Image (tube, rainbow, N blue to C red; front, side, top):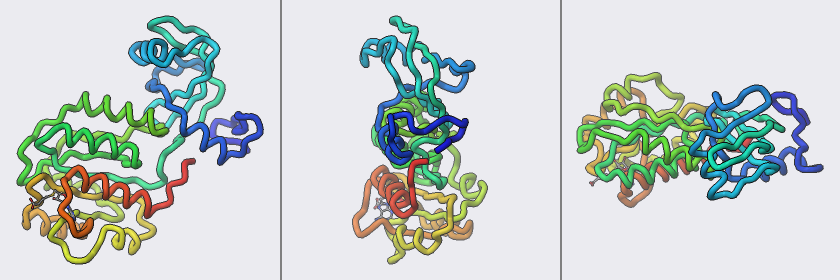
Length: 267
Ligand code: SAH
């Protein structure tokens, strides 16, 4: 079996491609943006190298997995390691390891409690969300998100869960602007006062939709005007069940529903 970049997949002596995927996806990866790859060599950024050496006790001769956050996946044999530096030779390159074959944007109101928002971010990465779009809605009380913290949380989650692509973290935008952006194949707005249409039945009704967008409101919920505006923009109002979920729970439940309703075999 030949893979992208023309390298042999049977790296773990005699495993099938599926088995190789299963093994390699479970290894906690290191992170190095694409500019840290030069020819057949890869170097970890200094902070990442410190962590690899001091905490994970990586040594010259160790084989490690490195992801670049843009879909690049590398198996690397370290050969130069000191307290601040870890680099080695690339043994294998793959692309989009651990990535879903659909595109899911979750537009979620900026939450009053940043910890809750950050919990959502971590889970969103694990569940395969491709874009997180923080929204400023009528009842949003806070308008600031800590983008650099968000980035750190997402990188850590990506390395831990076996993804190779960092989800996009969009700059906060107003609800109205978000509705105006490029329409998805299927758009839904989660609203607890909705009738019996569940997110799952909306997904099942559109099995070919690959670009899905889910909207989740703030602690105080969406206003009726917002739900109507979303309806005019082609979004369907959907329920996540009979209980009122906290916003971050609603975001996680919605991402999990999309993941489970769509085939999500790691490539
Ligand atoms: N407005 C509500 C609570 C909002 S919960 C109140 O105070 O009574 C925050 C967001 O989570 C909502 O805007 C909605 O997008 C989502 N949500 C929570 N529970 C939901 C459910 N059962 N069905 C659909 N969406 C839900």
